Image (cartoon, rainbow, N blue to C red; front, side, top):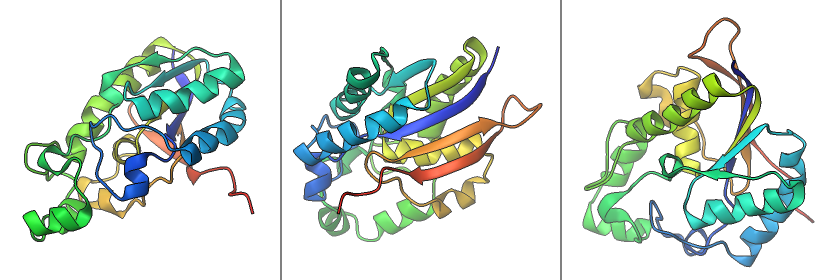
Length: 206
């Protein structure tokens, strides 16, 4: 038994996103724009016809996943291993505040996926816990799995699943609010995936 496709969907815009503040494990809420993003994306996500759907247990992901459930009727399971990167002492701060308190540290963090903020976790650690979820799903389910999660986690997990060397992980761009990544397993390889779509999304309304 194995999956045929994996869809990684980022949550909609939050109040912290709008204010330019770092969230991590802080439990922020969707803005009205974020809720509308989720409502607009839900029908497109539903076209993937996921056989199993899971979400981070943080409110912003749960609220985004709820829009999918409302449209499709598909239930969603929650797993804390799909939470965003824990950013330790940086959580709740703006980029300028981090730069003031830890000069140059954000540059190091962006360039090194194995480096963690003070009291936090690295992207390598995030990908490790999230890949446990994928491995379990891959060996227990068939068809398509949908994971509603967070930008940092999705980027790190994608890099791990496609087998990128860790020093190349920072080369992957970020995931826009309510956009998604699609992966399929490589033929004959239970541990590597190939990238089908990256940062795909519903076009913004004019």
